[in-house]
Length: 246
Ligand code: FPP
Image (cartoon, rainbow, N blue to C red; front, side, top):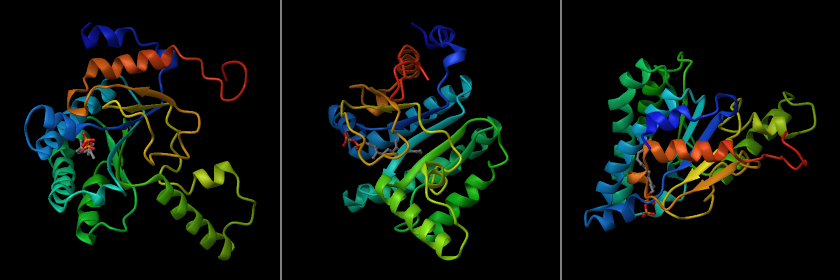
């Protein structure tokens, strides 16, 4: 079925507020096509573009994509440099189009290993979109869920010591110290390429998320499959530990 027809099947009352995606399989896609890994990543960017367009089209409020993890530094220098450059270059290339579509984009993750001028470039570019009220697009860059929690604990300790925090720590307080502060938790987490694990992605925020795993490699992940994953999500009963729908 055409994806426009699939969009009509979406139940507007049960739309997810936040979808997060582990974009996996660029390397295996490249192997299958007998080309270099970097070409898999290049194709992957095209998929990011079409999924962001679709997210805008269906009025999704939040989309988070896992672009580079704190573990990805272990790859070869060539691949790491290529990925870092591809990510910032894609941002710079697409920013005007994103702004035109009312997208509010930010990078979430740790600044620690990133060069100062890299971070500055990303920030300057993203800031231009921060008055936008449409899709909130998070690019998880040098992101690790454990690192995010450790960063949060350290900030909390600082604020306890300075007297800014006087209450006990609860779920809400901790959530507000994460990179995703003030954002809804992901309702649906998609992972492509057949792997079925979270790999240190949004480990706190995914406590009640639904999962959609597909064997499709990220460069082949289509708008149709994206909409199908949402249709499937809409048929699930979410219990949040209780017996009925919350
Ligand atoms: C996983 O494939 C993919 C990545 C580590 C990088 C994802 C990055 C992009 C699609 C590029 C740009 C993103 C933005 C937001 C512009 P893999 O290399 O782990 O594949 P493999 O598991 O088959 O080796």
